[in-house]
Image 1 (cartoon, rainbow, N blue to C red):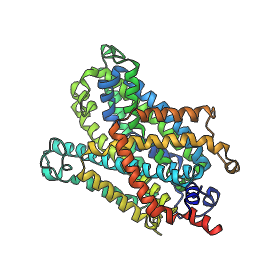
Image 2: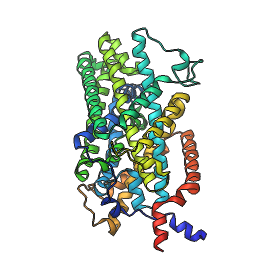
Image 3: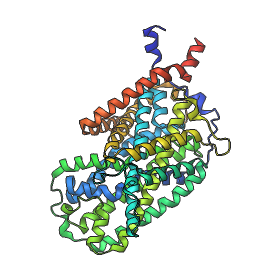
Image 4: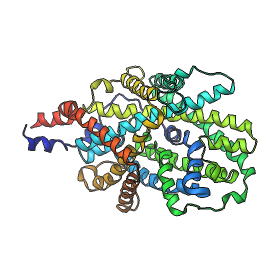
Length: 475
């Protein structure tokens, strides 16, 4: 094949109409409530017990809740774009599938590979945090693991650590749960999300009686720049609602329920973050909140230690739901890429009994647990934000091309982004702006990850692409 012809086939687009009416084997069992609990499960995790204190102490002071508002606005614009895509193209794969339909295979692969890093490293990072919280609970009963099995090698403060056993066990348990079927997993996730929300409300109700008005002064000690800088940190707390759209093929009435799941989960999560932030900085002076567990610290400060123990349990439950949703989202993303031939076919084989990609789930879980168990947490979180922002930016600008393409005008769409094309373009610009705020190390790591992905694409994916092979057969 000539270089010119090869270059032109890099941007072959996916035939969405064919896939929409083709039976995939995935079971449609999820409702709008399932999706909302899935989204809240992904967004409201350990971050709600940690990030409000860090943002208040380092960036925004008592006005920390405004950073969450700014981050929520950016995410909301992206969420509107996701909602239109998901109601027009209700297929597994989320942003990867949308971009494949609009911009073609090569751009879709780059985006899909970036999203694989988001899900994979999110699972690893959250599992490491889960392990730390879980071991704190065990310590309350004077139970301790050998130091060699308490954390990854090189973890600060643990010179003899080699392997994070709790992180490995929780990922394997959740992987086992996910292969049992999506309906059962969603039910368990919903129960844990409800328990988590109850714990957060308990903190707010108890803490509101200990608010001291003087703790709100000065309200913005770092000015508006601090609010924006804090928003870049707060943004990390919101990533995960895109996992809802990966479930599109397993949803009843996806054109209606997926947008409800995306927007509903984001609204609930934003209200919880704002309420907790306002109460937290009212209880304790913002300068004292630069600690690893600001919520627990605030409860100790007001001598409500019994609530502190419940909050620690809530954090463990919260991180469990995050792990489950990211494991689920990651496996469905890999399923979609494999189904298109860009990854080995084994990743898209479904169990005839549970209708889930079993091999894919185990391999994804094992990889996630490997990173969590042997690499320190501060080394595996760098890629999460940039991969997500890249996906948000591409989905946002993709709406403009979706509307302009006559092929998609025949498809039903239950949701439309308001104020088109202004909101999609503003969303794109805001996402790129937040990407430019990230550290240079993050960009270097991102390009290294993409380079690895390009090697895999041109050595395997390009030759096995279903879309390309179909195109070549028709020539």
